[in-house]
Image (cartoon, helix red, strand yellow):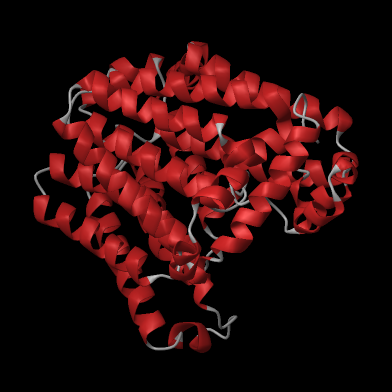
Length: 406
């Protein structure tokens, strides 16, 4: 095996085992994503250093990349008025390296992933789903054996990673005539997600499966229209999400969702929405959610709405963009999302249905859970997009180098 081949094999192993590694160490995906990206980068360099620049810079000339880079530029500009520049830089220092690794992986791995890697990935997903289910059924025996924190939510991040990776990996296997393994990947991933206590992971599974099915059955324009409407509303309604849910959710719904802390989530959304209403134009600055209760805009919010601004983040990535980056950030995020859908529209079936399923899954999760700049989330998305691009035929991969990873 050539030097490039050995590097590709190492990168393929790392990409494949990410879901299982997350079960064993639920902060490991950024490291794995970074190492896999370096392996494929070194492999491409060894194979054809002259073409590497084209592979990496070509996708950055597209409108989609322009919108995404403008969003990142605005995030950097917002550091100028962040009241906590050290905290903002710390968040940026976690987010940007992982984002770069995810970009490298999505650009360089497709077409170079070894043939054994998807099957290894299927084994990793199967073991991850089983371990989550067995560990929770055994009162977290695995966590006790490893001497770690005994809490059921330790499996939330692995379950969310399964959500992202399972569909694209199953598509790779299905198109590689391993349809039994593709079904097993979806089944074991669903087992881990449904057995976990993460309502966000279960919502993501439902939204992703529903969107993929609709995209297969409906005409192209209808499927894309539904996806665009959902993403547009997620951005536009984020600042008033809390008020809308406070009026619309009956008490019975809160009782059924007691494990998901729905009342607290609604109150948090209302508090951050009030902060956005107080200063919608530029936001408090990138990465300020962790100390949002101390920001100047928080002092303008009524005292009864101020307490929950200290929870660390608004449990809604779209609302987090509004709170930290204001209207310009929200507009640039919406533009990036719409251009992403335009890129997906050029895919053929079943790739388009799987891609829209991934978008719906990720958007549903982002609307109710986690810090949008978290490195583990960025790494999981990078792995999912890499598998999505790997599902395309070799000639389509070559043609899509100018478009890059959506």
